[in-house]
Amino acid sequence: MSTSSRTLLCTPLMGTTVDQMLTEMRKAKEIGADVVEDLEILIKRSPLPTLITYRPLREGGQYDGDENKRQDALRLAMHLGASYVDIELEIPTIGISMGERGLISRILSPKFGAYLTYGALEASAISAPGQPLAKDLLDLYNFRLIRPDTKVYGVISKPVGHSKSPLLFNAAFKSAGLNAVYVHLLVDDVKKFFETYSAADFVAGCSCGIPHKEVALKCMDEIDPIAKKIGAINNIVRRPDGTLAAFNTDYIGAISAIEDGLRELNGATPAVGSPLAGKLFVVLGAGGAGKALAHGAAQKGARIVVANRPLEQAKELADKVGGQAMTLDEVASFHPEDEMVLANATSVGMTPKIDQTPIPKRRKSCSGWS
Image (cartoon, rainbow, N blue to C red; front, top):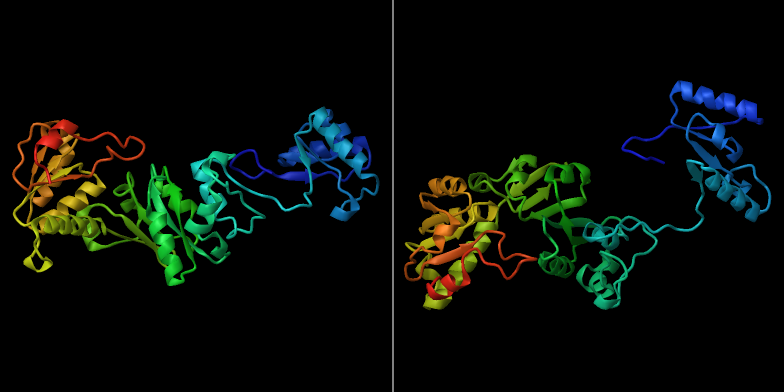
C-alpha cells in the first residue's frame, strides 16, 4: 500500500501484550519502517502510522469467530483513526480509470484479466466519464477477440478522441486475422509515455499526431532517412528487441491525395506526371504536418510558400525546400494564382474548434484556392 511514489515498508507486530507491541513499534521506527500493523487499541499510542489486520483462518490468519464481529472490529479501527485497514477481498475486482485517458482500461480489460468492463447501450445512457458504447466495444474494437496476447496499437496525440484511425485499423486487423487492437492514446509527454509503456506488445506500434510529430524524434532509436530529412514523423514501430523505429508517411499520403484531386479536376490521367509540377503550393503551418507537405510538394516540382506564426519557423522550413515564407496574417491579403493549392497543416479547424479557419472564410471563398 503506497501513499506516494515510493513503496512503504510495513512491519507486522507479533507481541501478545500491549507493552510488547509498543516496544516493537518503537523498534520498528528506529530501524526505519514506515508503517506498523496490529490491533486497534494501539492506534493512538503508536509512534508510526498503523495498519490494522484482523485475518480469519480461511485467509491465513488466527481469528476463528463470528464474521460480523470481525468486521465490526475493523470498522472500529477506522473510527479510532487507523491509518490503514487490511482487507482481503474474496470477489473479483474491476479496475477502471475514468475519463478519456481511462478509455483504454475499459477496452483492454480482456487483455489484462479484468473481471468485466462497462459499455453503455446508447450515448444518453453513459453513466461515467469515458464509458464507451457497448456497440463500439464489440464492433469497433473487436472486444470479443481481445486476449492476453493481443498486441496493442494506437494513435498518440493531444487531442486524440476525434481521430478516425481506430475505424480503419481495427477493421483491417479483423479482416487480415491479426491478433491486434488499435486505440486512442491521449498523450501529454511522449518521452514519459514510451518509458511507461515499454512492453513489446503495448504499444507495438503507433501513429503519431499533433503536437508530437517533431518532439517524438528524440525518443526514437532508429529514424528513416526521409523522416529525418523532413524533421517529423507520423509512424512508430516497436521492434521485437524493444527499440523504436520512426517513419514519415504523411508526405506520401497527403501529396498523393492532393494529386488525385487535381487530376480529377483537370481530367488528367495518372500517367501524365504530377499535376503539382510548377504549381504554387501554399502550406499553412510549419509544424510536423507542414514539414511533410512542404517537402512532398517540393519533391513533385511545386513552388512552395510557407505561412506560419511565428515567421521564423516559416523561414526555416522555406529555406529547406527552396520556398518563400510569410506570416499567417499575410496570407489573408495574398493574391493567389490560378489553380494554386492551399494546404492547411495547422491545428486550426481541428476538434473541438471545427468551425475556425486559419484565414478568413470570406477571403478563401472568393480567392479561387484549390
